[in-house]
Picture 1: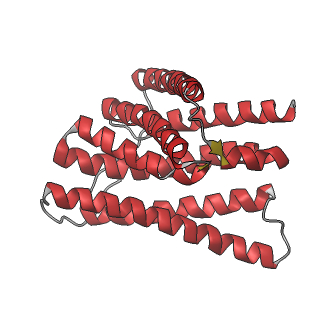
Picture 2: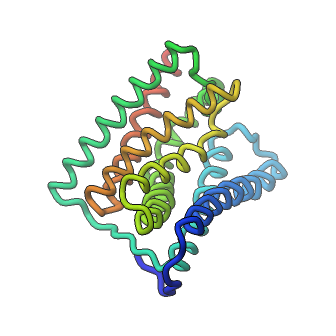
Length: 241
């Protein structure tokens, strides 16, 4: 996937400003798109807490994010390679999923130890509507993982890499990825930030996988499988209570 417009070299400060602006813009556009979807549903009498409305709003937000990310990719003439993974890359998919799960469990335990584990908006919603988790799991495969990896790895990480190299690019894109998930948490500011940093750590694994393979389909698969495992596990735990 490649844009058509060549805009030349830009300074490192401008690149930082651009990716920060892109992240903020995708956040705002995602919220607006979600609201635009929800308002007519509520006007038609749908309960805002139903799976259909919640998943639909998330899908609308993600599609809006993709549109903005794609516009920036075209503007900056970035190239994103998306191919069917070969056997070598399948190994990175398996290793990436395992690394992400181990990291998530270890960091969650650490946050619990220091009483820094934030509340989760998704978990709170799932207590009254567990099927929401299954809807999110399906959406993760179809839309969430592809869109978020396209925006944060394919566009932002690629843009940062062109200016700063691979390691700063992975770190920067992962921190921005984590910042987008601040709204997923509830509670005091410090636990919320800790939760976002946990997400950033997982994002760094996705970013490292992308850097090693150069194929966006690989971190998309890692992200999707990771989300499905967490969401289905949460669904089983919630419904068994």
